[in-house]
Image (cartoon, rainbow, N blue to C red; front, side):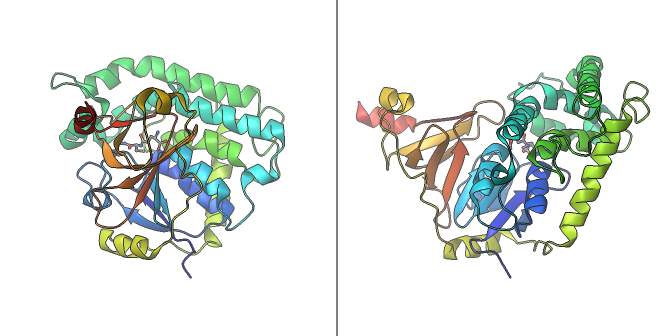
Length: 341
Ligand SMILES: N[C@@H](CCC(=O)N[C@@H](CS)C(=O)NCC(=O)O)C(=O)O
């Protein structure tokens, strides 16, 4: 039985940011379907939804598509399906820990360090098409040697990752607890810390021994294994996701309803005031860190302190696209600005 509203994740296998979302879905017991994307551009299924944003994952709930795993988890926390939300079950201290761990893995250089440690020992660093695609994402010019950059920066990155494991081993996991926030079952705090570490530890040949090993960090390694076992168990009681084609996605979204809770352009917002943004205006939306040359175009539907919502203008079906405020920018289309003058 599909969920109402339908939930679809757009991802590819072994994408670590997608794992963050898939773990969440498994632990909450939220049924979903998936639309598998190629690891490098182009991504025609997303183009048909009017989405030029180039990062993975995305998640649709009804005909609302959410960009960025940050906003995806916030949306899922509001979804009434499966187990109660994590927020409903957590104490203020546990919620603070979740936020701090999310900030550590997402907002510091930690994830980049994981990439620098992992990539040299995978075939990806010898895959020309992959390297070219990721240089485009990072905004590097034709002379930027991504492989050389990763190899040069790896020693420092190993130290960063080692320090993070040491922190877990000597603080949160030191008293022998099963889960980071001292809960009975894995919580959002575990999800927020485990996804980059599991990606590293489960990639064949990627763990930089002897600097990092199960012998040096037995509690942290056991916790990552325990988490995977919990996900496998949770997955068994969840209906297996159907894999949808781009065409099937269009069909599902075409019949689905919209979530209008963030359909307000807050007049007191500093950006709205300084740029004179208004509902219905055609805007472009893009992430400020990587992939920022890929700008998605649509009519502004909502702009709050947490979320930007647009109605896609380049889609084969009526789709609403949501991005978090953090890490994203929105502006009027340049030609529209010219028209105003
Ligand atoms: N801030 C984004 C980052 C997502 C991200 O960087 N994802 C990687 C894949 S795991 C990616 O998009 N790589 C480039 C690509 O797939 O085009 C999020 O939290 O979702």
